[in-house]
Length: 143
Image (cartoon, rainbow, N blue to C red; front, side, top):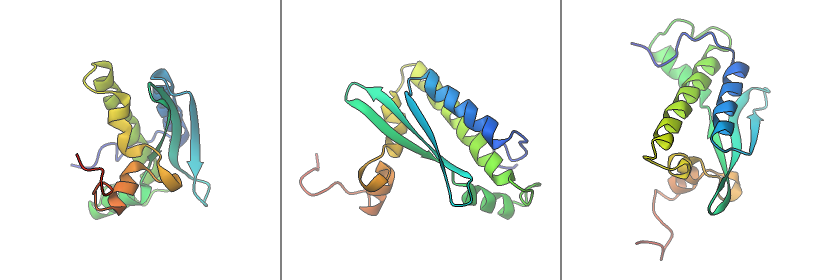
């Protein structure tokens, strides 16, 4: 058994467009594709209005990790140009669809689902900030 979507042939740009459509249909008012030095998409940033104002998020695609898993598991196509990127973005598209389903069922809020990807200080996600702190709250912030 391979990772989800390991054999996809859907181009990255089409998947990015689909993710953008999902986000817009659920309230995103601005979306930006972020590129690495090789001019390949590496994340999507978006803004969602909330009762606490506009919230910025960044959803990363860890293409190197996908490539490592495909290589380790000897999945067909891992050497194919662009295949790990197609797989990574397709997985994110499926994840976004699943998250939106539980939001639509009012099981959670959009903020709750995307909280790890909330942009905090120094253009880091909340997950990155908390990871750097060993997942400890700042002194005096414990409940």
